[in-house]
Length: 183
Ligand code: GAR
Image (tube, rainbow, N blue to C red):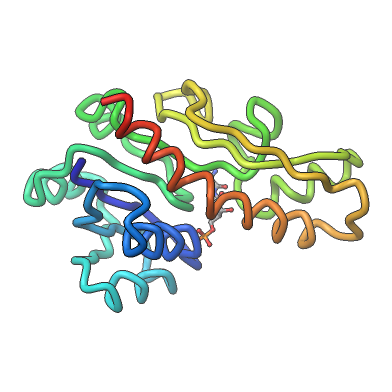
C-alpha cells in the first residue's frame, strides 16, 4: 500500500511507524505526511525524507493524496475530523488510532488527554488502544486491533497516557501488517 500518515501534534505514533518501516516490520511505503497545523511531529517526516505538508484547507487534501497516488490513510494522532469527501473517496482505506478501548471513551470530545482524564475519573482498572476503520461516525468504524493495559495502580491521567502510548506504538504497525496480510 502507498500510505499517507496524518498527524496534528507530537507525532510519536508517526515516529513509531517510521521506525517500524525501517526495521522491515511492514511492506507498505509511507509516501506522504500531512498535518492540519505546524505540528512538532512533522520533524520526523523531514528526518526520514518523507514529503510532509501542512494542509489547513480541507478542500486541498484530496488533490494532494492523488498527487502522491495514496491508496491508504493512517490517522496517527490527527485531531481533526476527516472531511466526508475523503471518507467517501477512501472507503475502507482509512484507519485511526484511538487511546481507549473503544467503544468506551470514544466519540465527540474524546481525544488525547480528555480520554485519559475520563478513564482516570471513572477509576477504570484497565485501558488500552484501538485501531479502527474510519467512517462518518466519529470513532464508530470496525475495530482492526485492540490491546489492553493494566492501570489499576496509576496515580494520574498522564500515567495512563504513558502506558497507553506504549501500546499505541506497537498496535498501529501491527494493524498495518494485519491489513496487508488480508489484502
Ligand atoms: C495519541 O494518543 C492518539 O491515540 C490520540 O492522539 C495522540 C497523538 O499522539 N488520538 C486521538 O485521540 C484521536 N481521537 P502522537 O502525536 O504522539 O502520536
